[in-house]
Image (cartoon, rainbow, N blue to C red; front, side):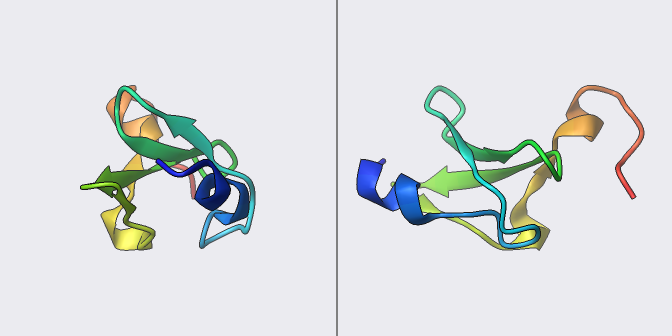
Length: 63
């Protein structure tokens, strides 16, 4: 993942910062508890493609 691209990308929902999870190939929004996938080096920044982190942990979804 390009470091310059990571510096300018923000969460499309809250416009907050994203953390890069290299192992999972995801961009994580801690505020919205969403993980956006990175496929073939391209971040997929659509809300309907994001994984709910709470669901993966067995927690109730954030409203």
